Length: 312
Image (cartoon, rainbow, N blue to C red; front, top):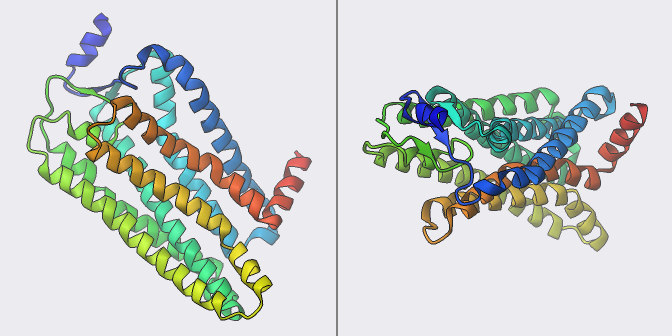
């Protein structure tokens, strides 16, 4: 307790409280969380290794899958090692700089993840609406450039978030009622005027999600129009089937993100532990399921992963 009080009064340190009201169950809660994290790492690393080892998978669609896997690994790894230390060893302290760094990388990876989903929608649009020019429009080099644009956008949009927080004074009670440095949870610890921080956080959420969902919706609108022009119903299903994996991943990612964000900001009637559990599940569950979804729906990837794992 003395060590806790010492850390608690340290002006360069925040205290991560974990899941309020469920502190006694932290060890038990850590079991499914650590399991999800391990499955996510194994699945995404397997995808990365299979694509890197197999020359036949060096195509735009699989390069995008690798980008998606990297952002999934990045998001969950920003949070889980520190969260598990909190659960297992009651290591609650985190420096202010460490907290802001965690926040920056978490949201930057999330923004990059969204950009990859937009690029995947564009990939499906070209594959269905302009298949004869697919190989000339979407080259590996162009995919790499689009990935770089997504990275630059993420850095430029997210960098002001920790910088705006850095200028704020923080209260003597420096306890963050969360298991990681979530933006709004840190904002609530400040004793200063946080209107700019709150507004910028909300604007960024709707700019990234709103713009990206609009672009994805436009791509799928054009895809549906092209599919409806095909006379054969079998061709309809075959064309749409190539999009099912992306649609599942996209819906899972955006719905969980929006629900977690909006309930944390506006769901005052929802218990704190529900907010936090929703937030951590949003970080853990999509990265765990994404490689499974693409493995099931993409025969070529499934075959190569099976071949690669058999070699091991």
